[in-house]
Length: 114
Length: 114
Image (cartoon, rainbow over all chains, first blue to last red; front, top):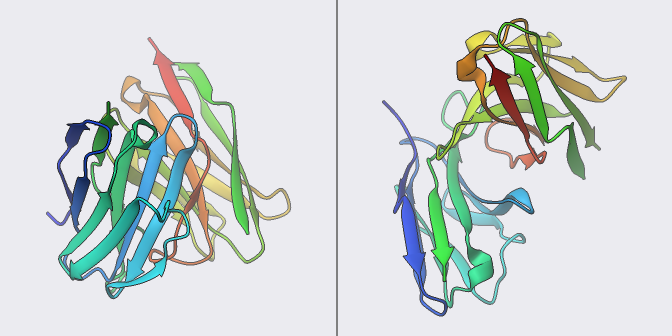
């Protein structure tokens, strides 16, 4: 059963701490997206990669957020330092492969910064 | 540039009644259109998509949507609501297929009343 796996599912941290969220895309997919969901803004694209190269990270606050793909099976999203306004659900999605008809979403990481 | 407007942040229907969730889009290129469903504390699951060809598309769980270019609309319908349809529904547009970023609407919460 191919699926996008995100860890952790939930994270509570104190303001100022570093947060790392991880995503394992579906094997064979060459594109990874990071989206953020909040009540106020809805679902927003933060960044995305194709073949591990960043294509667009204009949705990310550059001073505190960073996204990487150390290898084809792992994508990371880091926040340092975290702030209460970063509290949200962060979704990873992957796409590509032979069909390439849709993006498949992980179950998300619910981040709470206190 | 692309954008999506979903009319009605909350729709309530009786079990067995018609479900109609409205979506209008704006796109400077031929759009790819999607409807995703999100159950509580879950990721997004694709209901259906329009890429090219037939303008009436059928999806999972008895849902369908019709692409109307002249009206820039992609409304989601289901003839008879079931209690299990209660969820958040998101309309999204992209400029290409699966590995192109999605622009989401704000979502519509569907409640089904017994």
